Image 1: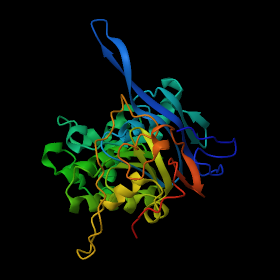
Image 2 (image 1 turned 120 degrees about the horizontal axis):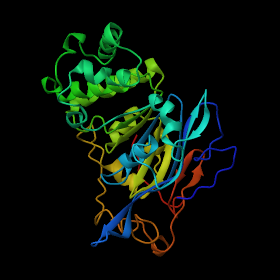
Image 3 (image 1 turned 30 degrees about the horizontal axis):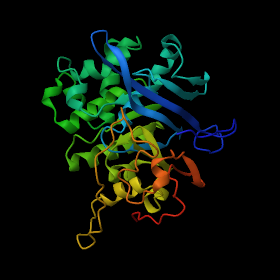
Length: 351
């Protein structure tokens, strides 16, 4: 994706605003493929391949797509858990101004670490089983030498209450809690340093449906109370619709469509988005709808097809699709899509 942006516009083509928190520009993460005795690089897995979008303060940007499309890798590159191959991740801090996290040294971005946190998908793997809740939730405060003793204990108790857990349990270990409770513990830990931006990497996908609703409502409630900004990663379109202000649809490392949530769901412009929307369960059993079954398999990111990556599975593909790579372009105000025939297709959305 190669979008052109002027100094007065964001990566999505929207006017620059003082409310802008994060700009992701042409982000790439290519993992080398090494073979042979000398571990020679013979190719690259293009996990993220030129992703650009913006996030405003206080909003939730939903990133959705099939497993393996590069969603989680994008999130980890943004907060520099892994170093991206190319691109910019510009964080707009009121005190320090605009800082490119992707290119800055670790010493430079260390002060920003407190403002950016992540909640991982699997609460069973992301919590240390040898630490108590007090140690897990209080660890960021101890590492940053902010609190200790009685003050630390009171802060941990406050954080546990904020996520619906009892402070009486702070001396228990993670194995004593259910999956939903463990994810609440992860949320409490992410809030310890009063962050401004949180990457929520499929935080409810490992939970039961009833528990998913509780945790989602908690995430929304915390956003309103603490003025948080989220990058919410998921593969469930119904979850994305419930929580997101903007939605970006990824396919094999690229963004294929970006729009406001209501616009994307009611008026999709990319065939892949239409297929994802058709898979959303209908609450009325009499309204079954027609699910779009995509033929073939997801392309290998180490050897993607020529032209549009989606063309081997696209029911609307033409000869041009296999020859020329579509660019992410603005078709409607605030609605971007990478499809040669977006204006011609009449795609089905959901109410």
